[in-house]
Image 1 (spheres, one colour):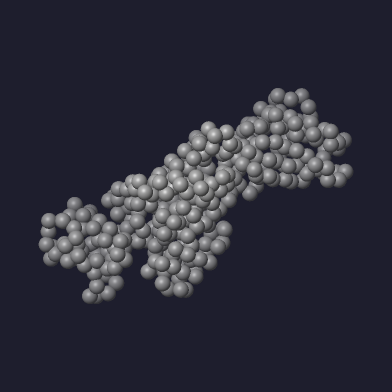
Image 2 (cartoon, rainbow, N blue to C red; image 1 turned 90 degrees about the vertical axis):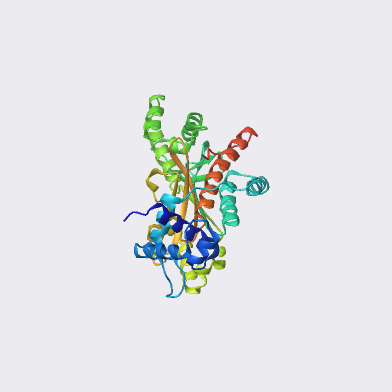
Length: 351
Protein backbone atom coordinates (compact mmCIF):
# COMPACT_ATOMS: atom_id res chain seq x y z
CA UNK A 1 0.00 0.00 0.00
CA UNK A 2 1.35 3.42 -1.00
CA UNK A 3 1.25 6.33 1.43
CA UNK A 4 -1.30 8.95 0.46
CA UNK A 5 -0.61 12.65 1.00
CA UNK A 6 -2.25 12.74 4.45
CA UNK A 7 -0.28 9.77 5.77
CA UNK A 8 2.92 11.33 4.44
CA UNK A 9 2.21 14.61 6.25
CA UNK A 10 1.43 12.81 9.49
CA UNK A 11 4.55 10.62 9.23
CA UNK A 12 6.67 13.70 8.52
CA UNK A 13 5.21 15.53 11.53
CA UNK A 14 5.82 12.55 13.82
CA UNK A 15 9.43 12.15 12.70
CA UNK A 16 10.20 15.85 13.03
CA UNK A 17 8.65 15.97 16.49
CA UNK A 18 10.46 12.84 17.65
CA UNK A 19 13.80 14.11 16.32
CA UNK A 20 13.50 17.21 18.49
CA UNK A 21 11.93 15.67 21.60
CA UNK A 22 13.15 12.04 21.75
CA UNK A 23 9.75 11.24 23.27
CA UNK A 24 7.01 9.00 21.78
CA UNK A 25 4.56 11.14 19.83
CA UNK A 26 0.79 11.01 20.36
CA UNK A 27 -2.06 12.03 18.07
CA UNK A 28 -3.06 14.98 20.27
CA UNK A 29 0.48 16.37 20.09
CA UNK A 30 0.41 16.24 16.29
CA UNK A 31 -3.05 17.81 16.14
CA UNK A 32 -2.00 20.62 18.48
CA UNK A 33 1.41 21.43 17.05
CA UNK A 34 0.88 20.87 13.33
CA UNK A 35 -1.87 22.38 11.20
CA UNK A 36 -2.89 19.27 9.26
CA UNK A 37 -6.58 20.12 8.99
CA UNK A 38 -7.79 16.89 10.61
CA UNK A 39 -8.87 15.87 14.11
CA UNK A 40 -6.80 14.01 16.69
CA UNK A 41 -9.07 10.97 16.17
CA UNK A 42 -8.33 10.91 12.45
CA UNK A 43 -4.62 11.29 13.14
CA UNK A 44 -4.82 8.41 15.62
CA UNK A 45 -6.40 6.16 12.97
CA UNK A 46 -3.76 7.11 10.42
CA UNK A 47 -1.02 6.45 12.96
CA UNK A 48 -2.44 2.98 13.53
CA UNK A 49 -2.33 2.35 9.78
CA UNK A 50 1.26 3.61 9.60
CA UNK A 51 2.18 1.25 12.41
CA UNK A 52 0.57 -1.68 10.64
CA UNK A 53 2.50 -0.75 7.49
CA UNK A 54 5.80 -0.74 9.40
CA UNK A 55 6.55 2.99 9.34
CA UNK A 56 5.92 3.50 13.08
CA UNK A 57 6.56 1.54 16.25
CA UNK A 58 4.77 1.69 19.59
CA UNK A 59 7.27 1.09 22.41
CA UNK A 60 4.53 0.66 25.04
CA UNK A 61 0.81 -0.04 24.80
CA UNK A 62 -0.22 3.28 26.33
CA UNK A 63 2.56 5.35 24.74
CA UNK A 64 2.65 7.29 21.51
CA UNK A 65 4.47 6.17 18.41
CA UNK A 66 8.08 6.48 17.34
CA UNK A 67 9.48 6.21 13.80
CA UNK A 68 10.74 2.82 12.68
CA UNK A 69 13.85 2.44 10.56
CA UNK A 70 11.55 1.96 7.59
CA UNK A 71 9.84 5.23 8.49
CA UNK A 72 13.15 7.08 8.61
CA UNK A 73 14.12 5.60 5.25
CA UNK A 74 10.89 6.85 3.65
CA UNK A 75 11.35 10.25 5.28
CA UNK A 76 14.88 10.66 3.93
CA UNK A 77 14.05 9.36 0.45
CA UNK A 78 10.70 11.05 -0.11
CA UNK A 79 9.90 13.80 2.40
CA UNK A 80 13.11 15.48 3.45
CA UNK A 81 14.29 18.86 2.17
CA UNK A 82 17.81 19.88 3.30
CA UNK A 83 17.85 23.09 5.31
CA UNK A 84 20.39 25.86 4.87
CA UNK A 85 22.63 26.57 7.81
CA UNK A 86 22.12 29.82 9.65
CA UNK A 87 24.22 32.95 9.22
CA UNK A 88 25.55 32.38 12.73
CA UNK A 89 26.69 28.86 11.85
CA UNK A 90 28.33 30.12 8.65
CA UNK A 91 30.24 32.71 10.65
CA UNK A 92 31.25 30.06 13.18
CA UNK A 93 32.64 27.86 10.36
CA UNK A 94 34.56 30.75 8.80
CA UNK A 95 36.07 31.83 12.11
CA UNK A 96 36.94 28.25 13.03
CA UNK A 97 38.92 27.67 9.85
CA UNK A 98 40.62 31.03 10.16
CA UNK A 99 41.71 30.41 13.75
CA UNK A 100 42.34 26.67 13.78
CA UNK A 101 43.77 25.82 10.36
CA UNK A 102 47.33 26.61 9.30
CA UNK A 103 48.09 23.59 7.08
CA UNK A 104 46.27 21.31 4.67
CA UNK A 105 46.41 18.38 7.07
CA UNK A 106 44.73 20.49 9.75
CA UNK A 107 41.78 21.15 7.44
CA UNK A 108 40.63 17.56 7.90
CA UNK A 109 41.33 17.38 11.61
CA UNK A 110 39.49 20.65 12.17
CA UNK A 111 36.58 19.53 10.00
CA UNK A 112 36.00 16.52 12.26
CA UNK A 113 35.99 18.70 15.37
CA UNK A 114 33.85 21.39 13.76
CA UNK A 115 31.15 19.00 12.54
CA UNK A 116 30.99 17.38 15.98
CA UNK A 117 30.63 20.79 17.64
CA UNK A 118 27.69 21.78 15.41
CA UNK A 119 25.85 18.45 15.04
CA UNK A 120 26.54 17.00 18.54
CA UNK A 121 27.22 13.63 16.92
CA UNK A 122 30.30 11.60 16.07
CA UNK A 123 32.08 12.83 12.97
CA UNK A 124 34.39 10.78 10.77
CA UNK A 125 36.71 12.17 8.13
CA UNK A 126 38.74 10.22 5.60
CA UNK A 127 41.42 12.19 3.75
CA UNK A 128 43.33 10.49 0.97
CA UNK A 129 46.93 11.46 1.62
CA UNK A 130 48.10 10.34 -1.78
CA UNK A 131 45.25 11.98 -3.66
CA UNK A 132 45.53 15.21 -1.69
CA UNK A 133 49.21 15.76 -2.37
CA UNK A 134 51.50 16.72 -5.22
CA UNK A 135 55.06 15.62 -5.66
CA UNK A 136 57.65 18.17 -4.58
CA UNK A 137 60.93 16.31 -4.92
CA UNK A 138 62.68 12.94 -4.73
CA UNK A 139 66.04 12.26 -3.13
CA UNK A 140 68.27 9.28 -2.45
CA UNK A 141 70.42 8.69 0.62
CA UNK A 142 73.08 5.97 0.77
CA UNK A 143 72.34 2.97 2.97
CA UNK A 144 74.89 0.31 2.03
CA UNK A 145 76.64 -1.09 -1.04
CA UNK A 146 73.45 -2.68 -2.37
CA UNK A 147 70.70 -0.34 -1.20
CA UNK A 148 69.72 3.30 -0.90
CA UNK A 149 66.88 5.12 0.83
CA UNK A 150 64.42 6.75 -1.55
CA UNK A 151 62.75 9.81 -0.01
CA UNK A 152 59.59 11.28 -1.57
CA UNK A 153 58.34 14.67 -0.35
CA UNK A 154 54.96 16.19 -1.29
CA UNK A 155 53.67 19.76 -1.26
CA UNK A 156 51.58 18.98 1.84
CA UNK A 157 54.71 18.20 3.84
CA UNK A 158 54.15 14.45 3.69
CA UNK A 159 57.45 12.56 3.71
CA UNK A 160 57.56 8.90 2.74
CA UNK A 161 60.59 6.67 2.28
CA UNK A 162 61.42 3.15 1.25
CA UNK A 163 64.39 0.97 0.51
CA UNK A 164 65.61 1.19 -3.09
CA UNK A 165 67.73 -1.77 -4.26
CA UNK A 166 70.53 -0.32 -6.36
CA UNK A 167 70.84 -1.99 -9.77
CA UNK A 168 74.13 -3.68 -10.54
CA UNK A 169 76.79 -1.13 -11.44
CA UNK A 170 74.76 1.90 -10.26
CA UNK A 171 76.37 4.31 -7.80
CA UNK A 172 75.01 7.32 -5.89
CA UNK A 173 75.80 9.61 -8.81
CA UNK A 174 73.49 7.50 -10.99
CA UNK A 175 70.79 7.59 -8.32
CA UNK A 176 71.07 11.36 -7.92
CA UNK A 177 70.62 11.72 -11.67
CA UNK A 178 67.51 9.51 -11.49
CA UNK A 179 66.13 11.64 -8.63
CA UNK A 180 66.78 14.86 -10.55
CA UNK A 181 65.07 13.63 -13.73
CA UNK A 182 62.11 12.21 -11.84
CA UNK A 183 61.71 15.43 -9.84
CA UNK A 184 61.84 17.57 -12.97
CA UNK A 185 59.28 15.38 -14.72
CA UNK A 186 56.87 14.80 -11.83
CA UNK A 187 57.12 18.05 -9.81
CA UNK A 188 53.66 19.48 -9.14
CA UNK A 189 51.82 16.40 -10.39
CA UNK A 190 49.09 14.98 -8.09
CA UNK A 191 50.24 11.67 -6.66
CA UNK A 192 46.95 10.18 -7.89
CA UNK A 193 47.89 10.94 -11.50
CA UNK A 194 51.16 9.01 -11.38
CA UNK A 195 50.06 5.78 -13.01
CA UNK A 196 51.19 3.37 -15.72
CA UNK A 197 50.49 5.91 -18.48
CA UNK A 198 52.69 8.45 -16.70
CA UNK A 199 55.46 5.90 -16.40
CA UNK A 200 55.27 4.94 -20.08
CA UNK A 201 55.27 8.59 -21.16
CA UNK A 202 58.33 9.19 -19.01
CA UNK A 203 60.13 6.20 -20.48
CA UNK A 204 59.53 7.55 -23.97
CA UNK A 205 61.15 10.87 -23.03
CA UNK A 206 64.48 9.39 -21.89
CA UNK A 207 67.25 7.38 -23.51
CA UNK A 208 68.71 6.02 -20.28
CA UNK A 209 68.22 2.53 -18.94
CA UNK A 210 64.45 2.48 -18.36
CA UNK A 211 64.79 -0.26 -15.79
CA UNK A 212 66.47 2.18 -13.40
CA UNK A 213 63.41 4.42 -13.54
CA UNK A 214 60.88 1.60 -13.52
CA UNK A 215 62.42 0.43 -10.26
CA UNK A 216 62.15 3.96 -8.88
CA UNK A 217 58.47 4.15 -9.77
CA UNK A 218 57.81 0.84 -8.05
CA UNK A 219 59.62 2.05 -4.94
CA UNK A 220 57.59 5.28 -4.97
CA UNK A 221 54.37 3.28 -5.13
CA UNK A 222 55.48 1.27 -2.08
CA UNK A 223 56.24 4.50 -0.24
CA UNK A 224 52.63 5.60 -0.74
CA UNK A 225 50.84 2.36 0.11
CA UNK A 226 49.27 4.12 3.12
CA UNK A 227 46.88 6.23 1.14
CA UNK A 228 44.38 7.36 3.74
CA UNK A 229 44.26 9.20 7.02
CA UNK A 230 41.26 9.04 9.35
CA UNK A 231 40.09 11.61 11.87
CA UNK A 232 37.31 11.42 14.45
CA UNK A 233 35.53 14.00 16.52
CA UNK A 234 32.71 14.18 19.04
CA UNK A 235 32.75 10.60 20.30
CA UNK A 236 31.74 11.73 23.78
CA UNK A 237 28.80 13.69 22.34
CA UNK A 238 26.87 10.43 22.10
CA UNK A 239 26.79 10.09 25.88
CA UNK A 240 24.34 13.01 25.95
CA UNK A 241 21.91 11.17 23.67
CA UNK A 242 19.10 9.22 25.38
CA UNK A 243 19.72 6.36 22.96
CA UNK A 244 23.13 5.80 24.55
CA UNK A 245 22.27 5.99 28.23
CA UNK A 246 22.86 2.25 28.22
CA UNK A 247 26.53 2.09 29.20
CA UNK A 248 27.13 -1.29 27.55
CA UNK A 249 25.68 -0.04 24.28
CA UNK A 250 27.79 3.10 24.34
CA UNK A 251 30.90 1.13 25.23
CA UNK A 252 30.28 -1.28 22.35
CA UNK A 253 30.02 1.56 19.84
CA UNK A 254 33.06 3.40 21.23
CA UNK A 255 35.11 0.22 21.01
CA UNK A 256 34.17 -0.26 17.37
CA UNK A 257 35.05 3.32 16.50
CA UNK A 258 38.53 2.88 17.98
CA UNK A 259 39.26 0.26 15.32
CA UNK A 260 40.63 1.97 12.21
CA UNK A 261 39.52 -0.96 10.04
CA UNK A 262 35.93 -0.43 11.21
CA UNK A 263 36.06 3.29 10.43
CA UNK A 264 37.63 2.58 7.05
CA UNK A 265 34.85 0.10 6.27
CA UNK A 266 32.21 2.66 7.22
CA UNK A 267 33.70 5.27 4.91
CA UNK A 268 34.50 3.00 1.99
CA UNK A 269 30.86 2.50 1.08
CA UNK A 270 30.50 3.50 -2.57
CA UNK A 271 27.17 5.24 -2.08
CA UNK A 272 26.08 4.49 -5.64
CA UNK A 273 27.94 7.56 -6.89
CA UNK A 274 25.80 10.03 -4.94
CA UNK A 275 27.35 13.16 -3.47
CA UNK A 276 25.55 12.67 -0.12
CA UNK A 277 24.31 9.32 1.14
CA UNK A 278 22.27 8.34 4.19
CA UNK A 279 22.56 4.85 5.65
CA UNK A 280 20.04 3.87 8.32
CA UNK A 281 19.99 0.92 10.69
CA UNK A 282 21.60 -2.20 9.26
CA UNK A 283 22.70 -0.18 6.22
CA UNK A 284 25.19 1.59 8.52
CA UNK A 285 27.15 -1.66 9.05
CA UNK A 286 27.42 -1.18 12.80
CA UNK A 287 26.04 -4.55 13.92
CA UNK A 288 25.12 -5.42 16.63
CA UNK A 289 24.04 -1.76 17.05
CA UNK A 290 21.30 -1.38 14.46
CA UNK A 291 19.61 1.86 15.44
CA UNK A 292 22.24 4.30 14.18
CA UNK A 293 22.52 6.30 10.99
CA UNK A 294 25.42 7.63 8.96
CA UNK A 295 25.16 10.70 6.72
CA UNK A 296 28.14 10.85 4.41
CA UNK A 297 29.40 13.38 1.87
CA UNK A 298 32.06 12.66 -0.71
CA UNK A 299 34.25 15.44 -2.02
CA UNK A 300 36.03 15.01 -5.33
CA UNK A 301 38.24 16.64 -7.90
CA UNK A 302 37.49 15.75 -11.53
CA UNK A 303 35.66 12.56 -10.47
CA UNK A 304 38.53 11.43 -8.23
CA UNK A 305 37.49 10.83 -4.62
CA UNK A 306 39.69 12.95 -2.37
CA UNK A 307 37.98 12.31 0.94
CA UNK A 308 34.76 11.77 2.83
CA UNK A 309 32.94 13.50 5.67
CA UNK A 310 30.46 11.50 7.72
CA UNK A 311 28.22 12.19 10.71
CA UNK A 312 27.27 9.17 12.82
CA UNK A 313 24.56 9.19 15.44
CA UNK A 314 21.26 7.65 16.51
CA UNK A 315 18.60 7.06 13.86
CA UNK A 316 16.86 10.07 15.44
CA UNK A 317 19.16 12.50 13.65
CA UNK A 318 18.51 15.98 12.28
CA UNK A 319 18.79 14.70 8.73
CA UNK A 320 17.70 17.89 6.98
CA UNK A 321 20.09 20.10 8.94
CA UNK A 322 23.07 17.74 8.71
CA UNK A 323 22.69 17.16 4.96
CA UNK A 324 22.53 20.93 4.44
CA UNK A 325 25.57 21.38 6.66
CA UNK A 326 27.60 18.75 4.80
CA UNK A 327 26.77 20.42 1.49
CA UNK A 328 27.99 23.74 2.90
CA UNK A 329 31.14 22.18 4.39
CA UNK A 330 32.08 20.63 1.05
CA UNK A 331 31.88 24.02 -0.62
CA UNK A 332 33.70 25.74 2.23
CA UNK A 333 36.58 23.25 2.18
CA UNK A 334 36.85 23.83 -1.58
CA UNK A 335 36.91 27.61 -1.12
CA UNK A 336 39.33 27.38 1.78
CA UNK A 337 41.74 25.34 -0.32
CA UNK A 338 41.52 27.83 -3.19
CA UNK A 339 42.13 30.71 -0.76
CA UNK A 340 45.35 29.05 0.35
CA UNK A 341 46.55 28.94 -3.25
CA UNK A 342 45.60 32.58 -3.85
CA UNK A 343 47.56 33.50 -0.73
CA UNK A 344 50.66 31.81 -2.14
CA UNK A 345 50.69 28.71 0.06
CA UNK A 346 51.09 25.12 -1.06
CA UNK A 347 47.96 23.07 -0.74
CA UNK A 348 46.19 20.06 -2.17
CA UNK A 349 43.11 20.23 -4.37
CA UNK A 350 40.32 19.50 -1.93
CA UNK A 351 37.12 19.50 -3.86
